Length: 189
Image (cartoon, rainbow, N blue to C red; front, side, top):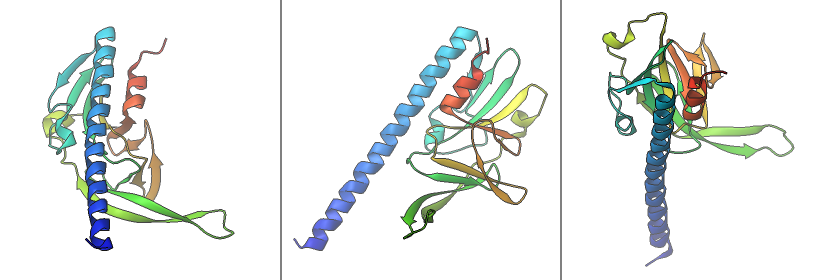
């Protein structure tokens, strides 16, 4: 076997191991979130209805929400967005269309700023919610819940690219990662 063939085998093996690791990590993080949410809801008598499920969004998105959570004051229509690979950047143009990519950085000689370029860029689509779920009322919030979450979430707002975090808005949706959502749900004493 020549050196090039050996390198290709090693590269293939590394990619296979990394893919399996990403899937296992996503399942573990989603299961951990489910456990925390179930505990919080039982402690505070919140009502959780599973519409699409905790696991479906690991594979595909649909026009139904994943879960609906009702607290005494607010009803949350929740859609999971799954980022299986760590260190990904997500850029949302609309709540339905996004691009995900990695960045490779180079430090310029004598420069204090890093320059980077996108790698492995792909686009994604999350279907719009059925109208029966989007009837907006004063006590209903639409949530995009990132679990596992990407490194950075950006969105386009008024023609500008802005970084988004817990509590940020993309059109009618509020963005949270798993820990931010659990923290937000806990009653303030």
